[in-house]
Amino acid sequence: MATHTEQLTRPAVRLRGLTRSFDRRTVLDGIDLDIPAGQFVALLGHSGSGKSTLLRAIAGLDHQVTGSGRLTAPERISVVFQDSRLLPWRRVLDNVLLGTDGEEKGRAALEEVGLGGRERAWPSELSGGEAQRAALARSLVREPELLLADEPFGALDALTRIKMYALLRELWERHRPSVLLVTHDVDEAIVLADRVLVLEEGRIGLDLAIDRDAGADARGEYRSRLLAALGVTEDLR
Ligand SMILES: Nc1ncnc2c1ncn2[C@@H]1O[C@H](COP(=O)(O)OP(=O)(O)O)[C@@H](O)[C@H]1O
Ligand SMILES: [Mg+2]
Image (cartoon, rainbow, N blue to C red; front, side, top):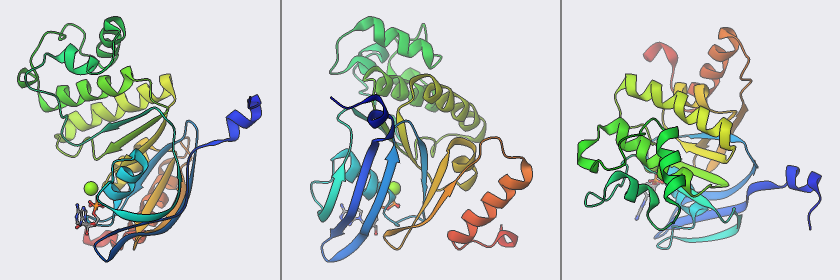
């Protein structure tokens, strides 16, 4: 059995030389990455840079892709996408419980995401934000060691998104899964994560630790560095 210290230091995700290609085109080009257990990581990159490909590889969902390298990931992984992917013919609680038992846990998860009382609603009766809350509840019920989220707030309006940031961070603090959040939004990454990666030409071009207690100046500095890594000049924004 692993000692306590080993458990604390063992990374949840370990990638070595991870390469993935579609046809002949290399999208991920020898990625090395360790994500410690319980770390909240954001992954930034231009559209088409391979963020979803990397997430799917870690989730074990990339069967059409050819690749090489070593990949270690936890057994219990939950994935959240931009679209809630709720089944329209099942009520909210049944969607949350899909493939698991333990109704009480499902109810508790809905309560945690602020959907207590909506157990019997149909997905079509939920707003976009509520549907994403339900998707988060569904991921929580599985008590994931790793939460993979692919632009989960991309389709939400700005105000709803801000509320979801607070909710996600709160859920993370309570349950402490490792998180890999894919986003193309620099500010979202800085607000949410403890570490921000920039995917660039198939590799991790920047790996930036975020000090959560940093003041406005340091946050401005993070922002500039991330935008520079993405090739965006601030005066063009
Ligand atoms: N199923 C697929 N078949 C062929 N090419 C794909 C497929 N999925 C993604 N790609 C290509 O791989 C590259 C990376 O895609 P993706 O990981 O979805 O980027 P991102 O999520 O960063 O926008 C893109 O050029 C995309 O066209
Ligand atoms: Mg994508």
